[in-house]
Image (cartoon, rainbow, N blue to C red; front, side, top):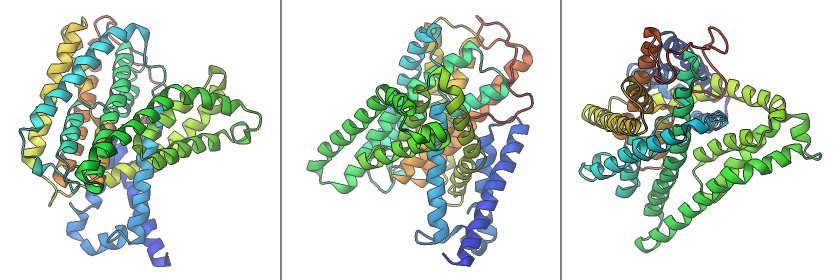
Length: 447
């Protein structure tokens, strides 16, 4: 890499990191999810604004194609930010599946998640799928992504909203995060199926598609089962082994090695890398005993802080950079999908909440929170777009839907607390508890 190329890359990183953090903090002060500001920074730097005003400067700074050094490095950082987002999200799902919430969790998961997925699955067949389809040309994969996008909810964004509002200690937060954890595990499995179908469509003959998909899904399922059941115990034993110098002398390095190990094995097995990173975070935390939290809790928090300040903002800024409103935008698609999927989610979760015994304001709080697509919605869009499953207009639609629904959730819950209304009637009015007064961020919890 020449000095000029290195200088251009350095300037690109400066603009991405500074812009994403500045606009992210501005969004927080306006009581919006931080991700909104980070994506906006990328939009301003991308083809929708700077690219129009100064196309030559934009190409010089951010690269001109696949072989351009800046494009290659920024592409790597984009994927690294995505993986770190999923890792810290996985590490942040501890202690959320409370016993008191098992019945409502089952109902909300069974109806609030399943109904939107099934309705979208049927409705997608009635749409002109060519407008939604990417380079892979797989109609089945597009339909699956469409259904996942209608049903997905966000562990990172609602955790961050709960933290900022000081309500992580409530039963409401525990219930919603428990549902989100189980739901995302199921829906990521369907995304693995969609990517398998798309890759098989491109690489195989018709006769080999079924076999390729079956193998891919089987390997993904086995990876998930082992990561959820066996690996936490294995990691606990490895971290306590006397020969493990990394775990004893450099716990941060050990956590990073585990993260990279999960992703490397997933890559070798053709498992969806983003989900592997999530499982790595889950496995590290799941393998910790309470007596080990002082040893591994700090390294996880350190990784989360650095990721939240540098790599994850770069990822979201690059997501915004890739949104080209001059070409890859369909207002009709955005409005149709946003309103349609939101209506289905609100009705489905409302029905599930009512069957579970909730009434009135409780139902509205649960439904609006569950509708926040946040980080997983954007990750879904990124993975599906990179795999050639969806088109640029549908990619833009999914990202905007994730941002708008997350904004709606944060604004509504803030209104509820300001009015002194209960999140759940069984809890009564909530007294916010802020871990660090005035803090704008929390480790392992991203918007």
